Image 1 (tube, rainbow, N blue to C red):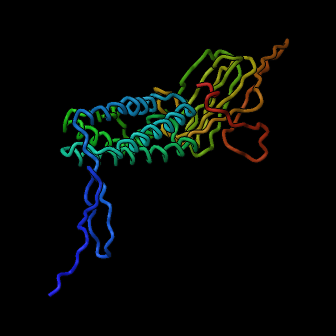
Image 2: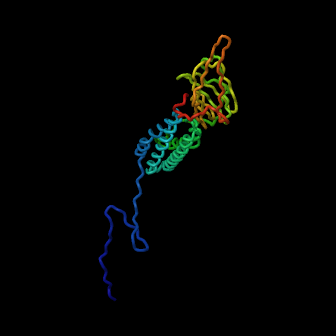
Image 3: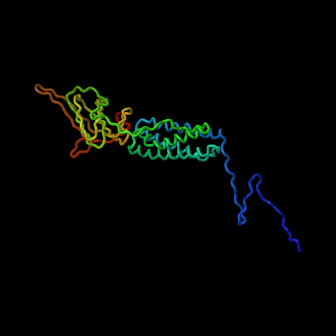
Length: 303
């Protein structure tokens, strides 16, 4: 029986690489080596390089004063956390904390997404203070705090970036006619304020460049200020929900306006009479109104 002639036996490959796996079609399938997990020290370094930026962005947002500053800091916090989540998701953590790492990255993304939503609410004046933003983010903030603490406790990893707390949602109000600032009221004139709007209001009255008085007027209520002194006054008012006495601002649904014309109070003395001006203003639109108002930049509002 003839012996078949055979060709030269040959095995091809790449030095230092992995052999290709055969396929049914006779071709080859490339096998990529898996990324090596970071050492605990290497992983700590990666977390540490991002910790300060994330923690700082959250703290800066929580300490923002004013609507415009708050809007900017919410945006920066969302960008900082989203960037950190992108960077950390590309890492291969030590096997012992893989589950905690994945939960942490997920919480970072969830919180960043919630911050982006909150940014829109701040822009629409639905949320007006940092405390209101934190309350709105309560669930996501708590989840990130827990995920960071869990990862940190698993190996002393610098992952706890939340050092602020969200308060409960409130609807705080002052009594109608409460003075937030009460200047000297020893004149003869009066100013009646009619707030027929659906939200409480705070009215700030300026004489020259100084605040003469600031008073709280509840929705659907009126209040008369007596003893107004002679002078030309500018009148500003803000509507909103939940008055925060510490920040002297409404935390939700805020708006800022002023009367375009100044209000003049003048006392006139004659031989037989003393005459003075009394004014009445409405903080809501009325038919036949003759005192137009204008929106005010929150930063220009006399707080």
